[in-house]
Length: 406
Ligand SMILES: Cc1ncc(COP(=O)(O)O)c(C=O)c1O
Image 1 (cartoon, helix red, strand yellow):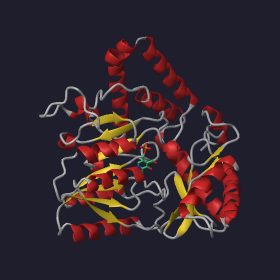
Image 2: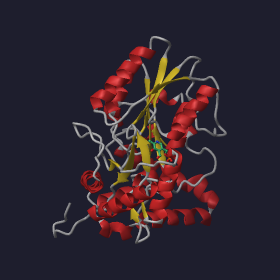
Image 3: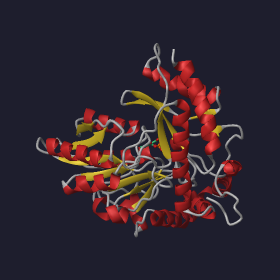
Image 4: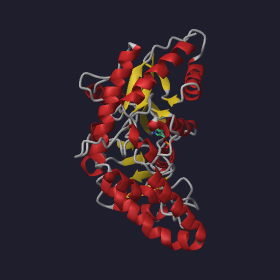
């Protein structure tokens, strides 16, 4: 991507736009995200404003600001009615909100995957432990084509719908580990065709891939904004179409909850005192993103860099990129097999020691994980990265692999 004057818009020179340490080589935007200084400044300004007069701000002035930011994010996910979107603090909370408030009936089954995010799986296990749901666990091993994923879901429905009702399916838009795109729109339609509600964990989606709720009409969708959209940590959206809103209540109920229900918008407006300022940064994040050319330009740069960077790392390590024949797995994250052959360490020790070594000895970061019998890293490409970061990353990964292959 280049400007008219041929000066690149994206790349390492954008690093100072962020608060990242100058010598740190960040290749793991996917875990916690981070956001530009200009948005950090706005965030702090909002927080200062709150403290100047907490009552005036929290009781009155925050309301039109929240509404405006909700309207802006609703437009980004193509949701014509902003009252179908609520702010929650993170994807773990958004997913737990749906799963723990939905009125499951005894014997209801929920489809989930071995790759479903750990916190979400913990909520599901809890609901199983208290006898609210039965779990249908789908084991998937990548690389898979989108068609193969859909076939596995179809076969699972055929097998398990006969022995009791499958009520809901938990579907990722982008899986955490491995960091691959999941055919979530087609999967959502597929389960809905069988009378199963779709709950989309789109934690990594906003800012990384387009979300169009009007076109694929999910039953519930949760997307972090603090991962890829450049808002401060603690900002996430929960979308539900009108038909499903009566099922949802915040994890901590608001004082004016009524048995008849008080309406989704009202209930999710003010569920206890908290810092709303993360939510107020949607507008500033959109402004920053537009200043760089907007969603498509950001997406294109990050995707191309993930592909190029992943190939480079695989070539340097003599391994492979996790890919399928249609090349549909890579968004802005890419998974590369690593030459890690631990002889004495347990898998959990490898995971922890890999992180400690790559952070403290290499001043870089990418998480290592085992999938389908092999060790991989998940590399994130972001607007502040360029190919030189992946060159550095390849050397850092190689050194850590050597150290841990003991
Ligand atoms: C797929 C997926 N879902 C949910 C989460 C949880 O996000 P949060 O930590 O913001 O709750 C993550 C975090 O990495 C994730 O990757």
